[in-house]
Length: 459
Image 1 (cartoon, rainbow, N blue to C red):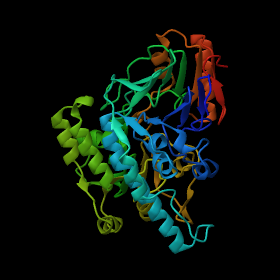
Image 2 (cartoon, rainbow, N blue to C red):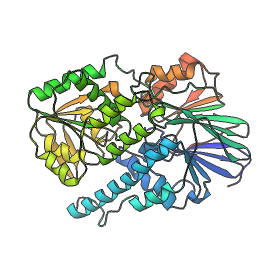
Image 3 (cartoon, rainbow, N blue to C red):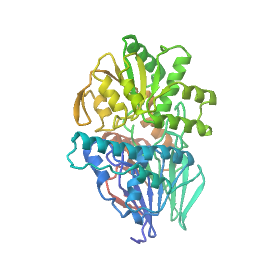
Image 4 (cartoon, rainbow, N blue to C red):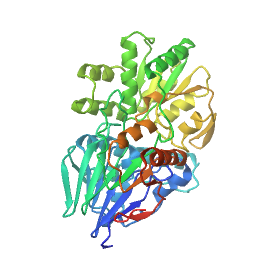
């Protein structure tokens, strides 16, 4: 393993927006930046089951940019496979991971049990990728690092977590290795985000690894509040139910803030709002706990938290499917990849008077992406389901910087020796690469999956 070179390997988030994993090797030490799940297309999801590209026990440290599962969700599998080092993250990221990782293990155990019971898996005895117990064991390996604190990893390796917007606790990671700086953008937020503060501008580095989720798009100038009000008034007017699949951490809070403001102004009917995700309830409480990290007042935090009827038990969730009155149901997951929202889609998705509002980015290969692209038959629990409900995608609620915002974030810094564009679908990554090349004049390219580059002479 020992080498005189400092290298950077791309173990994920190349050619896809999921599976964020970057390995830095220097002087016999291995540091992993992010450890995310692959999601979406089956050929990507299968990578989660492959042996990790290096033995997990040889990795000393993991630096987690933020809590979303495409950046943190593989950690329990890494620990179960032998990782015994330290996982570093901001305190609020750790608080959110304490919700997300056990929940991910629970969902995987639940899906394995359901597949076994319904016999729709190709495997005779389907198993979860990891369990709740694996996730709980992983949480013991976390150690908090404050924003802008210098973390000493080894004699010639330090790291700093820089505010990235996007999500409570989210950071870019600046890694100093042997006198060279590698800057990992993580997921960058928007300057107009209603809840979290702006990302700190890029300060320059020798190597930049930048996300490109919206690298080929510009967010619409339309007002998401007005769009949401129009949808709610239209659907409730015809007696329908509105399903809002949303990420339990980040997007649900944005949706609840939007709805609480609309209700306070009398711009939508006073229909019941149900929050059917225990994790979403707990995540909202964490947003309240780390109030100093975001921009909304304590009063609005309280209004947001009190807006919805909280659905905690499975029985309450089942009863909600039998409720025919107009209502709004907010539930995870944002790309319809699992959870209680799937049962709501089965119950309400076949009736054209109802609506499904997609409130965030939909990765290729997910049910959410299929609906956004016009597909009206999706596979849920091994059965093809016809979807006749109205489908609406609200781009204005995205927590990701768009292409213009990414260029603005980069544009005031000195040019890196090389910029690597990752964490985007192929079209988005290449579009951002083109703009960085032609508008900033920087050396830039999109790396290959599993590619390993020499930091001293990047190509």
